Amino acid sequence: MKILQITRCLFRQPLLLLMLWISLSLSTGCGIIYQHRLETHAGTIWTNDDILSAKRYQNDLDWMQAGLRQHLPDLSRNVKAVTVLIGSRDSEGDRIVREQEVHTVGWYNRILSLVQFNPTSDAETQFLAQESDPPRHGTLLHELTHHFTSNHPALRSRWWLTEAFACYFETAFRDQQDRFILPPLHVDNYSISRRKLRELGSSEFSTLVNQITDANWLQFYRNDSEAPLRYAISWSILWALQQQMSGSLEQRLLQVAQLDDEQVNSRIASVIQALRPPLSDQLRVHLREPDFHRWAVEKWLENDRVDGPLILSVIEDDLDDEEGAIWGWPCVTRTVFRWGSRLPRSDRVKWQKRIEQQLRQGSLSVRLAICRVLPEYRRSGVLNAVLVDLLEADSGELRAAAAMALSRTSSHPTIVNPDFWINGSDEQRSAEVADWRVWLESP
Amino acid sequence: MTPSRCTPRFSPAGGSSRISVLLGLSAIFLSISLSPGCSTVHLKPRVTSISDYSREKDVKTYVISVDSRMDEEEYQLWTQEHIEQHQLDLNNPDYPEIPIYEVHYHFVLGESRFRTRRVAFLTWRRSNEDEAKLEHLFTYIGSRVPMQNWILR
Image (cartoon, rainbow over all chains, first blue to last red):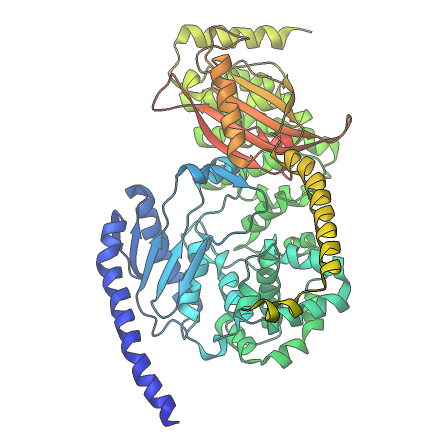
């Protein structure tokens, strides 16, 4: 015992020196390494990104902190300021996007209250530009959730639970009123867990869940291809079990956290049961809920098969006002011009005509939004004539968007360079439009 | 160490020569079996065909068949050479009066005559800073994303 005390004393001094060195280098070094320092209510951000992106992080961090405080009032009572280091991007190495590559995009250090995260690389941003829901600052929210929750004793050294909490909040989104909305489920994690359940069957899946809840730090965080699965299953356990608890969201989540590993493992059957319904069934439930209907529509449209008539009936309520129309008409377009929408022919033709009418008479924002999502699909060609008309619109941005859309909806070669349609001479653009009109009139 | 102490550690003389023969034979066997293998490893991936699938006036789309995967950076180097060789930043072979806006390269692995697998996709785009140049936008390594989603328009 005495030896241990001496060892501790000897050990404490270098540890203090190390802490002093780290805090000194953090306080002075960040200024050397990073160009911008931004203060927020949550803490300090250091970044080398351009000042506009940096301001967006600042705004996001304030929104995230307010949201987490609202949903986790007890846990966030004594939360200290956080230091956020945003990794640099746009190096040449960032220009390679690797399929299914698992790599660390952020981490959190509890002792230093330090978050580090790497924004989506420019290459990934470019590549994912066509995706309807490009990843934004989910990583930052994930790491910030660690900052708010990891001091709770029930989460200490329980890595699955630590990550489950962070995954629970990482998909929060801003609604039209700028509120922090937590979606009813994490679609990716739900799909990953469900896919694994179908692949393994209940028995083997239960074994896998046991392994994940029993995993030590090295086992849980090893950087292998199964890492996303471990996160997904951790989220699934928390998500499924909190549904059995009562009280506010924070109370329910903490009730799950209070269960020991044995109690958790005894409830795996209910986790499996919660993962049984297909994703479409889950989304169908939330389509009629005011806070989640837009979220449910967008998530459903990312899937292969959709209930087109139901989705259109939900969207229709939003089309009356300008803000709703800017959101709604692209969703209508994505529902109508796709495979597997289950739309009766008469309905489809009716909606096609309404889309065409919007392209002719809608607001500039709506017309732009429709042009940007029109997919490469055999029926999209019915809009070619109106898109050619838009090549002569007053707005250069709209002309460019229409040309891009035409390159997807038609096999006729065109010029897609936006600069040509925005800044090109009237004469050159007229020649190109004339070429289109000849093609439209040809048999 | 004296020889008297050393001797017992080794086998008798006759046994020692047998081991040397065996060792020699296995060394020859290893060198024969390794030498063609090593040369195969060092062979550079070969481009077996280049097809032009361009659909737009200012976007060139090429499908490049290779007999094996390249290193990640090699795709960019190869496409850069291809652009320089054909002066795609200066000339549009199909529409001489229209400058090329983007060049797309789809690399496919020809596993058999009828079966190919996409292994990489690269996009070069006319630079905003220097309009006379095309710049590498990104390299996507993989095959999961369907080809229609690879076309960024």
